[in-house]
Length: 193
Image (cartoon, rainbow, N blue to C red; front, side, top):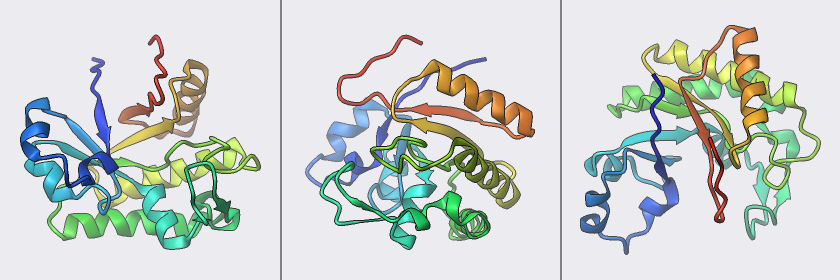
C-alpha cells in the first residue's frame, strides 16, 4: 500500500522563536535534518519521526562547500563529494548509523543523498552512475548497521516522474531498495502525482 505523508525541512525546527505550542497541533509526522539544525530531542518530543540527511553530515565533515552565500552561490569542492570517495563514504554511513543507535537515539529513517544531480546544489560534472553508486553503498551500509532502518531517496529537488522511475528501475536492477520516496516541493512548485 502507498501512503502519502509530508514533513518539514530540518532548519524550520531549529528556529527558537517558533514555540512548541504552535508546532505540536500540526502533528508533523517527519522532521528532516542533520541532527544539529533540527535537534533530534525536540523533534521526537513533538511526536515526529526523524529523517537524517547523510550527505549534509558528510559535507559538514568533509567541507564540500565554502564561501556559502546561498544554496547555489558557493564554492564547490567536488573532490570531497561522497561519490568521489566511495569507500570512505560507505564507512562514514555505517559509523553514523551505528553511533546514532549506540547513543540511544532511535533513528529509523535515513536519507543518503540530498538533491542528487541538482547542478545548482552539486556539480554539472556529476555522473548519474557515480551518484547512484553512492546511494547503493549507503543503502547497504545502513541496512548492515541497522536491518530495521528505512532508507529513503532519491531526494530530488522537485517531483520528476521520469527521474524517479529511472531511480526505482536502478534500485530493482541492483537488488537494493528504497523504503520511502523523497522529493521537495519548494518555491511554490506543485506537481501532479
